Length: 237
Image (cartoon, rainbow, N blue to C red; front, side, top):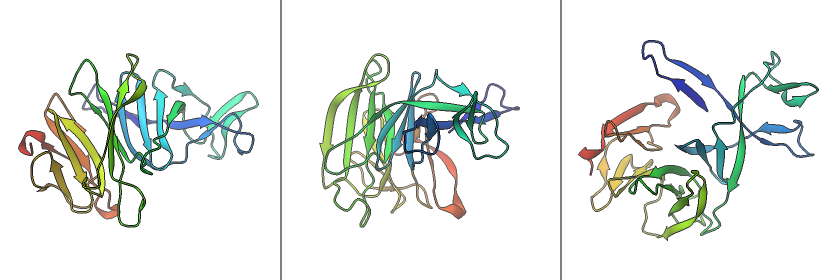
């Protein structure tokens, strides 16, 4: 993942940070290893970063525990080796603190966002991508997860399963009490109580809503046309 410092918009700085997890006795890396996953989406609340790990659950990271490591010109070493700590050519690592699984309808975590409908009790909002041959046994599922006061997942609050929920959903968000979904096959946005609306091309993915500007952000995934764009969410409500 990448952290961007936009304090000075004329001098933007960024740093890549490697996500890592504990290594096992069978791993080639000592103590910790890189997390080799497809990140379906990320969401941040407080000091906790959540990563939707498609097919392997949801992972949580404590942003107060970012560690600086030694540089490695060979870009081959990772873990604690002797008295040195390496992470390939990264200068910082962010260790995983927890991992969650959803055992329901063979569904995976494909995307994730924060539902702030109740500012005093925000929730994790997540769902799975389902296509013809991908996750063919799964039911398109969306779920809400309670968060504790520390920002960690506490318990399953509400789970809705429906075969009528559109397939090919690669992003979801709750804005002003309405559910927004990005369909990457039709390149349309789906909003509660309204017909599908055109809004993007080239396979739209995750959604991010800015409460300050009212902008709804997304990105496209096709290799030759990868774009980041924003629209006014109020135009689609």
